[in-house]
Each structure stands twice: as structure tokens, then as C-alpha cells.
Image (tube, rainbow, N blue to C red; front, side):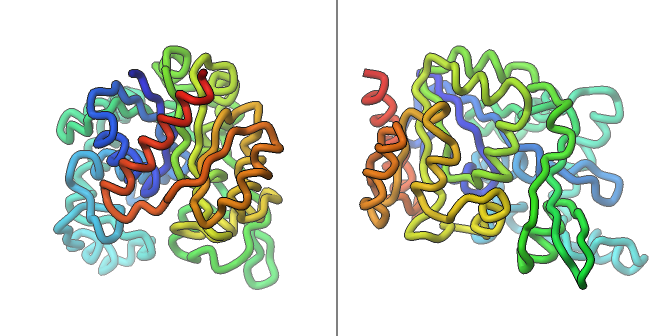
Length: 318
């Protein structure tokens, strides 16, 4: 079975770990979000790609869900001593090495897709990890700070400000001119199942779909497309997705996110049992919907979610 997963960072990575457990023989291709990418300290940092790579490769800090396990921050401290920032973004010493290698390879002319493949040879994540694009795409957020409207990088909004102010607009800068990375469209065309895990629907999966050709490839694929709600009981399972959903005019409900993706994209949608009453609303929008437990409390629970998604895919295929 060939499964393609569009994934952001923590939620996508943890879902993928459950999917590997649920379908160990499957050929899994991950199309990773690069809209969170940022240049820091002269280095190219790809938070979502690295979170998937570290999580599936056994190097992630499990408590945080991002960064390396057993990390130290001596380089960051030394940079701060020189007055070099930003101090709000925590790159650890082990993590620095990944970004140094990536930046050197990009500087030598290798595209991000080739660099990602090379980095994955160390971690052996058990999936094929593709960036959504080799081109530079950065998600920016419009906010009002101290009475002044500004546009800032998504990382500054999410990490430094902790989404403490309203997001007035979310823009994937560069997406309009970007092209899908090599292998992305082919993987979607050849997939048996396409899954949208409980990643952020605006700044993770939404940014992937903003690259010209990708949404169209998902919508026209012969494979069934099944998504899992990142909203449980009217609130994000993790993070502050409600802030960016509001910026695009979408309520923080499981049904509203399904409608946001639309029947033209989704064939099936899983909601948590806490939102079982919303299943009829999703079905009325033309999307098959089932209620199952969607809390990724451990790998076993996440594997059960993945099996439910695969079973729903088979149902809508029939």
C-alpha cells in the first residue's frame, strides 16, 4: 500500500509514528511543510521537516515534541554573550549541526529535497520525506503591536509572541511562485491513500496546499483522501490553531475545519468522539464522517487512529 501524508511538525510527526505502527509494510511518503522555515544565525532551519525526521528516527525530545533529546545550549549562550539573537528561538547544540550541514549543502547548490534525503540517511525515519517545494516559502502573519500593524514571520508569532495577539491575516509568502518538489506530484498520483493528519489546517497543511499544483493533485487523485480533525471539543489538541483559523474566518470546530478543506478535497473525515454530534453536519457537506478517539496519548492510541483513517479510506473507495 502506498500512503501519502501531508504533514506539519509535532502533530504530523506523532501521527506518522502511529501510522508506521499500524501499517508497517506500507510505503509511506511524507510531504512536509516548509512554510515554517526560517534563516537564523546564518543557517537554514526547517522545523517541520526536522521534527518529522527526529521523531521517526528516535532523536526527538519527547516532552517538547521538537528539538533533540539530551540537548545542550552552549552555542546559543555564547551567541547571546556576543549580543547575537534572536534569543527567543531555542536552537540546541545537536540541532545546530543539522542546520550547518543543510546550509552547507544548499550553498553548494543542492536543492532542499536532495538535502533532506541526505539528512534522512542518518536518521532512517522509515518514510520518504519530501519538502513540499525546493523554493523558498515563508508563512507570515499580520498583527497589530503597540497600535501598529506589522507583518512578522510565523515563527516570531508562534514562538516569541505565543500567539498572544490576534492574527489578522496569514500569508504563505512565495507560495504563488513555488513549484512542488521533485516526486511530490508523482507520489500523489500513484498513492493508494492520501491522509491529512491532525496538523494545523492553516499554517501546516494549508501552506502545503498553497503551492500551485498540490491541491489540484490531491483533489484529482484516484486515491481516497481522509483527514483527521485537529480540533477536539471546540479547541485545538495542541498549540494555538484557533488563532490562525480565526484569521481565515474558520471556527474552531471539527466540522468547520472539514468544510474549510471541502468536499472537493476530502472524501472522509474523522472527528473525536467528543464531537460525534458534528458528524451529521460534516456528512451534509458531502464528506463521509466517523467519530473515533483522536487523542494521541501514546503510540498505541495513535496507531488506532491511523487504522481508523485507513479503514475509512477503504469504505469511501468502495
